[in-house]
Amino acid sequence: MAQTAEYEIIRVFDAPRELVWAAWTEPERFSRWFGPRMMATPIGRLTLDAWPGGIWRATLVGDEGFEVTLDGTYREVTEPERLVFTTGDPDDPGDGPASVVTVGFADVDGKTEMRFHQYGVNTDQAHAEQAREGWVEFFDRLTEHVTADAEHHPV
Image 1 (tube, rainbow, N blue to C red):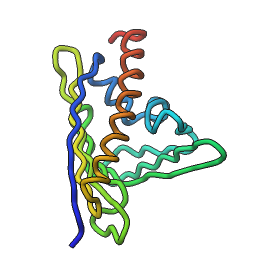
Image 2 (cartoon, rainbow, N blue to C red; image 1 turned 90 degrees about the vertical axis):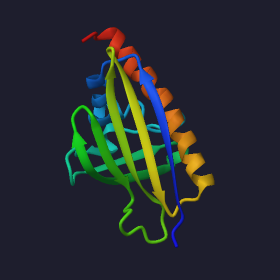
Image 3 (cartoon, rainbow, N blue to C red; image 1 turned 60 degrees about the vertical axis):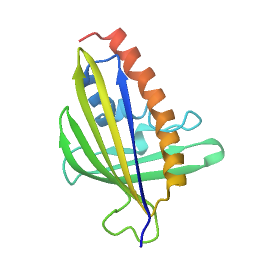
């Protein structure tokens, strides 16, 4: 029986919902926050086909040519409220980790509450906690990106 694990991260951004949505769906913005601080996500190595059935793929590049590619498929895209996408293939994961991510975006008095939920297949709770810590670092970078953008380009 495959192991499963899940977790949720909730963040409130001092930025309008459309801006946070754009950070998830526009390659120029996504490349500025996706990944750990020590790696880059070049726009030329990024695909965000944000529609149901579309693919997403991001290659993170580190020192000395180290690379890792993450990818999956969008299952739901409801602008600017909800994104559901996979990493790997949760319906046929083989031995590899796979997951379904649901991200909800709510407008709260001009700020954005983001609810990020990840359900992993072939993932134990220890690996899920490592993944959660990774996303927390990504979201720290996302906070910096959307806050700076909101200050420079008020809606």
